[in-house]
Length: 453
Image (cartoon, rainbow, N blue to C red; front, side, top):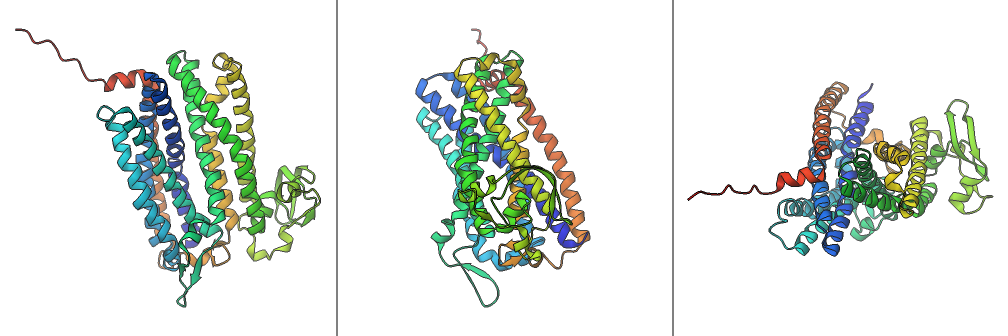
């Protein structure tokens, strides 16, 4: 492989691995605030203990997210130095704001939340939890503003030396692509956290232990997951898809496997794209649905790849097609599972429905797969552009870093992240295995032995 391909694989691996952790922390931050709110409102210690239990898992994920996030910053200067030189005047601003305003807010108040409960009043500890949530969600916003500018560049000016700078601060932050992508992404983070919390609750109920906490985790996870799953499809996913069709027609055509422009374009549910023959093999389609979803009418024409120059097609069309359909298929499954679970919860039958507790418990990895597939869809769909319409990917890589160097560091990261994965699994497993009750007893101060006269 040439250096450019290895640079792309290198960054794709590190950023995909890194995002396994923030998606859970951002979603858990909201659910922990809900638990703390219930504890404050009901004065029930059960919710406070549950919040402390999930705060421990949050802290582990937060730490590993920081550790795996730092190398990506360096890759901008090593593997993608030309990209950094030309666009640093734009992307440097939201990335710096993410570190200064949100990361420090989140990390500072995380310390207060973890260690200050006995020193703060109840409302003060709730405030610390809320500020951790606020910091994590603001952090996600600034990161997505950066990515959205790469997808849909706005509020910039091109300088004579070929570099870019911000022409409007509020125009950059108000990028419509950023807000649509942010809403969709944060719904996905809540889905991930909800499935994880529901899975732990289902595990405890199947094991017939930690009954109160199992029911609490399952109830909150199902309610939050049901709402987030629906919002992830409509309106956030629907609006984002329409914006992609308008501004990146090649990406939309590649996602749907639409090689030729069509009026009343069908939506392909399943199939295999054949690039040479420019068709979908063994297609399972729903006629006219794609036109309706994008334009609101079944007779509208959807632009196909045949109307776009070949050198502007996404570079790996089959991967784009499969990534999008994995994301969409899993999203449909999430909605079905959570709606069924919410219905049984409403009827008071969920906690004893072992036939459904098993799928809930076993589904916890699926949001990670769906989120990864979603980000692959977004990033592959933008290709061959690094900054859409402005800089091609081949123009942004470092010319002085050869394929050998890139491969060597990639193998190093693979080994290091394998160790981190084992550490993460062991730590989270220990938290879940001990459960909220035993974890709480470990943090209770020991009773001093009586002193004889």
